[in-house]
Length: 399
Image (cartoon, rainbow, N blue to C red; front, side):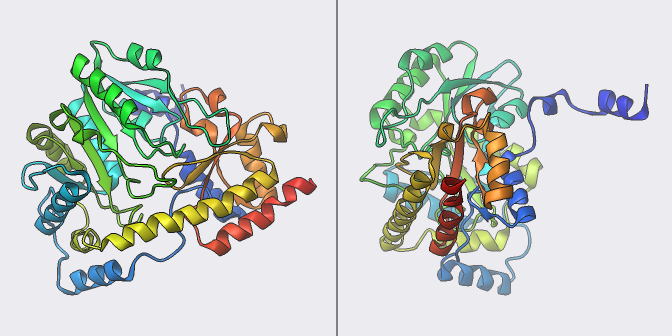
């Protein structure tokens, strides 16, 4: 047996054989390599608000440069509690219910590791943000997937089958992950859908873990409803959120969980030994960010709506079938008219020959075949970036 074979057999965890590195982040690397317009990874290419950049600079200058309290600075936790009450009408104890993490990504894995045991199951709607499956596996749980089906009409909604969802809940179910507004589909779960999920959680004694990172990015008079605010859910919901998307600071890595005290204690233990704490000066700036006026959030949503409505016609003209998002800043598309065998082949062609990077749809599904005729485009970009992408995509019609 070769040395490499010995190492592969002896030194690697079985867990890592069940997933790959991030396809989304790999597409950013491909965009850089080929000089493509990057509509793959969901980070803005425009500036964050001046007020919060200044607050971060001032915090560094004021020497907020050492470890903060492990579960978050008092200023930020107080701001999170204040805004949760204002936006969702949910009263939160900042001392006993909030844990500040290194982004919502760490918040999710810390939560799953804090609540899951080997043999537990976690229900996940698919297509799903690609971290959820690996996070479940790393926590020792088994992911169980429930399909979101694309709309049959241009302005329809992504839907799930109630019977399929009910069948996913049973004695081994520990948690359900609900991402609303949803990445990658742009679906915003309705009150009726959330109430069904609530009823199943109560019936089967299941924890809901909600990823609400896009809560302020909504279109077409759509309403964001916090699952924790529904009757019977405050004590069985972990709400995950962060600064990244709302304030255009994806590189700051400041997120948080809001949970009942006993679950918060468990999350804090895991978080402490995973990362110790999020960046102290950026937490101070986060408290300032959460204090921005209501007009900021109105402008945020309006700006993203304009970007959505700028990109979608260009995609349609190029031959994509677009599924209109109601929230977040992504467009899922159907690529079947282009005649490619699968999404990976077409994504490679796009980035290398057309000069536009998108994310293969298969990365959002358990079975890659289910997303083999889909691509996701991010529109959290400057107008000139979207216009350049549109210009390049016109080559598809000529080809």
